[in-house]
Amino acid sequence: MRKKGSVLFVLVLIFALLLSACGSDTAPETGTITLATTTSTEDSGLLDFILPAFTEETGWDIQVISVGTGAALQLGRDGEADVLLVHARAEEDRFVAEGYAERRHDVMYNDFVIVGPDGGAIAHNDDITQTFLAILEQGLPFVSRGDNSGTHIRELEIWESLGVDPEDNENYMSVGQGMGATLGMAVEIDAFTLTDRATWLAYPDVGNLVIVCEGSILLLNPYGVMVVATTEHPAGAQAFIDWITSPETQQLIASFGVEQFGQPLFFPEA
Image (cartoon, rainbow, N blue to C red; front, side):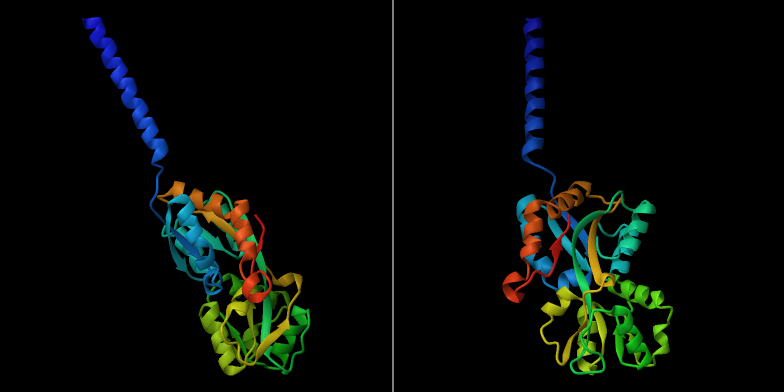
């Protein structure tokens, strides 16, 4: 009897372990992750377009904090975000080198454009250096985001490459705002500004502004995604990486804007 009882005990234990294993397979970890990203992904409408599919397909909810890239990276450093979707390559590489993320993944790209008054002092062209120099030398009004965003960083890189200080232009205004608000101010005062093309196309009323410069290699705008090393939800953060770089989501990104604007607002690059 003792032997039969021991066998029965072992069988019950094995059954319990099998049930536990099956339960873990059928009930994957879920919860809420925090995505810190740029204002351009929100202002353009991209996030509203793609994120519902993430929750539906993975079971993870996602909370979005939309700020400039510099602020998004700082949220990662402070442990206040699980995953980052940003666009300032040098700063992203530094974030990885400092140990705040293990790896940066390519996601997509679009481009920057310079917009300004239609029929104004600068005609449409593809020479960003000449455009910036003309704005500076003629003292034309220019609205800068001034918020350490990816757009602001790129603007400063261009000024620096020219060896000039934009503050030498008395009509240069650094406003410390997101892309939508910066565009709104440029529209209001008929000024020039640097904007990503997606936000420009999605902006509801551009007034008298038109694109005056586009097509320069200096205006390419790649986006990257990273899991923050200190995340408390590594499974959810990795699920987002896997999802946004998957062929299905890349195709979803490629389709965004085509119906409304006749062209995609972002191009997949994963």
